[in-house]
Amino acid sequence: MAPNNPRHLSAILAACQLIEAESTLPPLAALAGAAQLSPHHFHRQFKAVLGITPRAYADAIRALRLRAALPTSGSVTDALFEAGFSSSSGFYERVQSLLGMTPAAFRKGGEGERIRFGIGQCTLGAILVAATGKGLCSIALGDDPVALLEALQERFPHAELCGDEPDFEDWMACVIGFVDGRDANLALPLDVRGTAFQQRVWQALQSIPPGSTLSYTELAQKLGTPRAVRAVASACAANTLAIAIPCHRIVRSDGSLSGYRWGIDRKRMLIDREAKVAASASLAPA
Image (cartoon, rainbow, N blue to C red; front, side):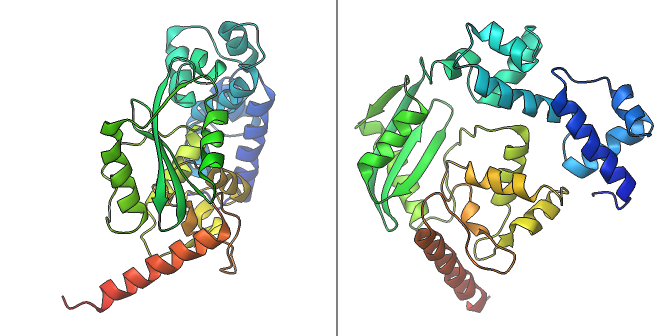
């Protein structure tokens, strides 16, 4: 739970700024000293406010720097050092988990990755479903199938995109059944790619029951990060797995609908449909 002490909250926010300003993670003792707290108390308060440790926060910041540096650096090693990462194997493994792929593959726009995809129609319009060897990496909705494919190509410009594979038809059918509301659960693995904070937001989204909504402020409070409303909104906007990660269940504080990657009309349709299903379920005899 987030601390109520304003001084502690201000100290944690200042520590975040200090971490962001440094190329490497400052020692815990230095961060705690700047916050005028013991190292143990500081670590506990930091995790209470942000939901992650100082090291995880620093890794997330460096992962963002690495994403920006990889396409233009002379090598992966150069980009790692520019972002503040060590070249040791332990850091390399953490970087890979943060990027969702190896740094080399990210730098090359997914080169070396094989991504299966399919395009079809659902009750919400055109749908594109794509998957890596780990699981679904994209569920996109729109009006123009060609635009959906172009967006996938822009995201993975050098990956091997494989369409029209017969064995992917079952995945397509499973996703479309879930999107259309015929299946309550999506029984397929997800290849979720994002920073530690984004993944916390996406996990929280998946815990919102169908038929319910939260505001961005309520979601930030649920995460124990009441002042991170903008970061929460950005994480929702970065979601690439429509409905599987239900960012459509987030609304403004007054209940009105805010932006949605796949269109406000689709967001309204999804919320209304889920509310009707939930209402019907509540009236059904036990």
